[in-house]
Length: 168
Ligand SMILES: NC(=O)c1ccc[n+]([C@@H]2O[C@H](COP(=O)([O-])OP(=O)(O)OC[C@H]3O[C@@H](n4cnc5c(N)ncnc54)[C@H](OP(=O)(O)O)[C@@H]3O)[C@@H](O)[C@H]2O)c1
Image (cartoon, rainbow, N blue to C red; front, side, top):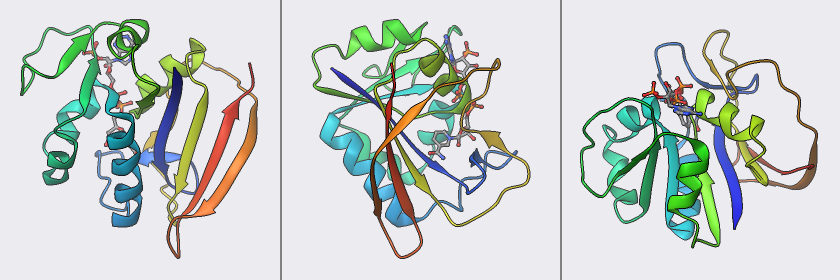
């Protein structure tokens, strides 16, 4: 099982404005992300991202994938098909039969997966914008991880995708 983190970021590494606004993320980026998720057939996200993503009209494109939400809160999901688990390890168990698993935010969840050494690769789609304040790609205690650049491509005129391998 290959665990892949897939995120859109600003040039300075933010994943949303402070008020959770992600309207600066391009349609081309969404299409690339959405295709990666549908190909994998699963998506792991944090509780805050779940509440945001499921309100977006585009979420309907992901209705057939196995959606796993990591949370220690007891809350009601919008569909009985959405699974809630209380740790990153439990989330991976839910999709353990998949060849590839997509982990996609937010910053708290990303930090947990990375610092627990559960990620194999990261795709970063860099949108041409600087956000002085916002939610960082990784949010948590100080942590350092070395990476190897294994791919790069333009997914549109203005968006560069970097593909990293986590050095273990
Ligand atoms: N640019 C992008 O590609 C992208 C992608 C995804 C999200 N986003 C943005 O990211 C923002 C949300 O990020 P966020 O950092 O605020 O929140 P988040 O990571 O989405 O959710 C945080 C919550 O997830 C649960 N969680 C995370 N790690 C956990 C762990 N190790 N064990 C148990 N539960 C865990 C906790 O829920 P409980 O409190 O319920 O325990 C925690 O409060 C939104 O603005 C969203 O739009 C952007």
